[in-house]
Image (cartoon, rainbow, N blue to C red):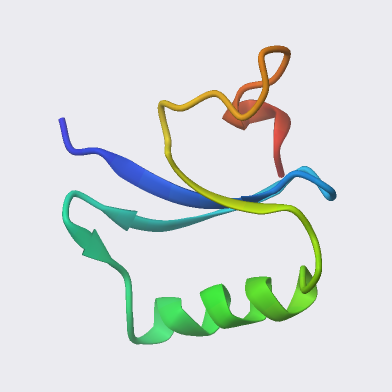
Amino acid sequence: MSRTYNIVCDDCNEHLWVGQGKRIYGGDEMKAFTKFLYNHEGHALRFLECQDVPYESKDLSDYE
């Protein structure tokens, strides 16, 4: 199974799937990534593998 990657905003409890395996998405997906970055400017953002747990008390399902 391929590793999947997300960017998460801990301030807003939101995440965006941005890649899989060794590929970060581009093209039309890049528009969503750019929008996410601008909407969360100045927030606590992290890039993580989907299996990583953002906080001990949360998992990715706690994020929108």
